[in-house]
Length: 284
Ligand SMILES: NC(=O)c1ccc[n+]([C@@H]2O[C@H](COP(=O)([O-])OP(=O)(O)OC[C@H]3O[C@@H](n4cnc5c(N)ncnc54)[C@H](OP(=O)(O)O)[C@@H]3O)[C@@H](O)[C@H]2O)c1
Image (cartoon, rainbow, N blue to C red; front, side):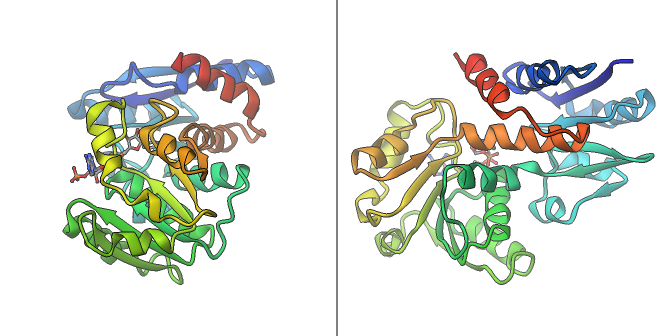
């Protein structure tokens, strides 16, 4: 019998997950297939019932369903609840459960790139879903302090207020992007995480966003990562490289969030090199 896995999104055609997981199943000789399903918001509940009825062993969930799906599951893991988003569904007996592999996916990607996370002082740009997942993942990995920087200060303050108790003892601070103390925060940063969509697709808007950041204030030992992987070398990573800083692109997080889901579903170690090559093929 062939196991069927899926990604539910709307739209979903852009997703690189099908090629990544199908290549991984093939590499391990597993009888399994992974398909994209475009599910409109009003059909999400029926789609989840379908997953249950068909006995599917797992699925991914992407925009716009990551929050709405939580109410339709039998169990949501505590970190996914804190983040407010589920990206992976799995079975535990008869129960359909949800987790968020973006958080640990980022931590794994950075560890793979030999970035020291324990005790790190992190500056996190953005206050959306990716920023929330990054915050929890980095706090769990032992970051000492995370400063959330958003163009709307109230958004950064909201995340900090909501997540502070869940991520103790990591210290959280909030700052507006235009705050005059931003260069000081950058100067005391070990890891800069770009989790806004401002660098997506490059272009003048991305360049303007980066021009406004005090990249020159970062210490020479700082590592810079951008979660955006389209393009792989974003305007921020280019600016950081030009300064001689170490950079980590967003492909590693995409890979490891998928690898964590794969491992959860199959109980097998994910074939990382096969999956990484698939992601690169899908992006070309
Ligand atoms: N590598 C991976 O596996 C991975 C995983 C998840 C996401 N991502 C990437 O991360 C990005 C963010 O995803 P998300 O789910 O968090 O999106 P989201 O929920 O829509 O949040 C986007 C955030 O970016 C901010 N923003 C957008 N344009 C900005 C600008 N010009 N200046 C300052 N802030 C700006 C938004 O601020 P406002 O609220 O003020 O608009 C918001 O805080 C996506 O583009 C995606 O490519 C990568």
